[in-house]
Length: 283
Image (tube, rainbow, N blue to C red; front, side, top):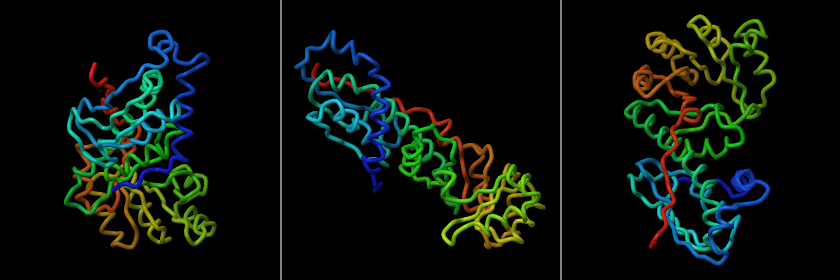
């Protein structure tokens, strides 16, 4: 079971999206064409198979416009479903449902797409010890939702922001003068609960990093041979993460090198939206 995000986190995102769509005059099409007291029953249904994520976005978008609307979820976040699956059935005021439709579809389609792509990567490394993780390459304002979708797809989360872990990258190394000096400063700064990760781009930098005992070493754009050697040199002393342009075609080979974690920016910056529609029932 995937523990849903608290409404406290999701509601402001949904409200902002609704406000953007409503503009200055509200849904003029619904006002013009749909009687104020008209009722509608409709299904949010998949057009292709995928992994469910973000069902709460449907509920929160609808009740923001009319708290009396009934929402019956027929699936659960984290569930793999075929094309033609009804994710949720809704019934109530037609204007409210039609006004919330696009906001709900935009959000859940995006999140299901991320969860589906994540599951594809997770499946591709099955049988290895490697775990698939995301990055901070997320849509501004949607990070909590998008990282939640990664979990729905069976992945794990990297750091959420700049404040919850130290990640030393190439420009930090350049500013400090060396990998070793950057790690030394980071460890002196970090509290006892804060992890220190360093990115390296060669086996030489890897050996320098190992001498300073970071918690995690990220192999940036290493080839498979150098990844295997890096894993051997690390000898289980630190977590080894592979990163850099990893695709569904290459991820299994990366996992077979023995790395612990594979970070994939594409999970959130390049996932294809899952095609989901709203279909009226009984009309």
